[in-house]
Image 1 (cartoon, rainbow, N blue to C red):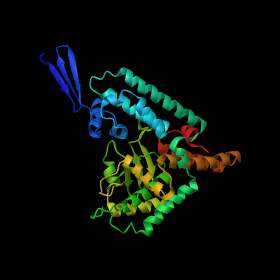
Image 2: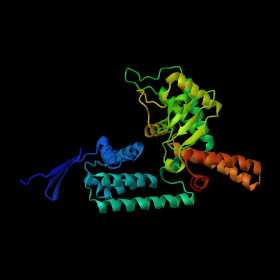
Image 3: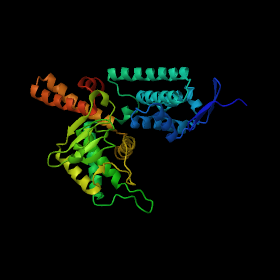
Image 4: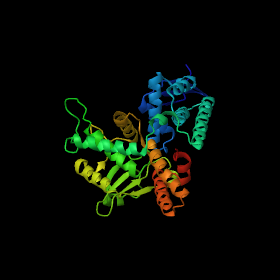
Length: 365
């Protein structure tokens, strides 16, 4: 019966203010849209892709463990045990902890200081284990059984190319079948193109959101805020990567397209799909980095029984080149040393880190 002086409401939380006190009514759900709204309202300057990644992590773990309210994140026991049983990588576990931290911080009038600190300690522990394993050159977690050789990686790419040719996917329509049967043609065209890009210019999951744009249109953009394939066959096409993990440190990445086979794939792509989104789903909706990563895992599992994504591809390529570089170094072959060192530095630039980090973390036998 006290007079209400003020109230603040979100989709999930309502605060009723009586004189100097708040009575807080929580009505939280783990709907991904609501999660992302709360996260973005709390920190609007955060990249939309990062907010979406946090939302996906929280939504998926909530669905798996039947978590229905914010209170389920205040006790870490159930979630930590799940991650342990799942044998998730330390990096993934740390990402889950960060997502939960950011969510609890984002709740309006949040007073979960102790709980946030608890998740921070778990995150720090996971990262400490991760970096210790990296220093030792150990391939751990789910990556270990999925590692392949460079020869196997090339073989997988050739298998995808053969599948496209044998099934005439270039000639067939890629529109989803009207009778409800899934049409895998566009999936294989996507995987073929992405594999070629990653073989030549290995990086993280940065290519999933690529948009094809003409050189003329690109020149009109003062500050590129997306990842582009700038298509200009005469002058030379190139990648302009502006949304990636370490962009604040390394800035825009410009990568020229020189490989003839990749050039042919781009000409085909433009002819079949036109400009705009380069990777599309079966309903022609644009893929994002996360959905393309899932597509890569799906078809590598199908064809070589391995879950191969951008990180493993990068490691395989760096291992192969680093082995040749070390051999040239041992043989004091300065010509080969320069050639392989140049390639390794080029690939470090593609991924957005230093040559030293590349050799410390990814050049594993």
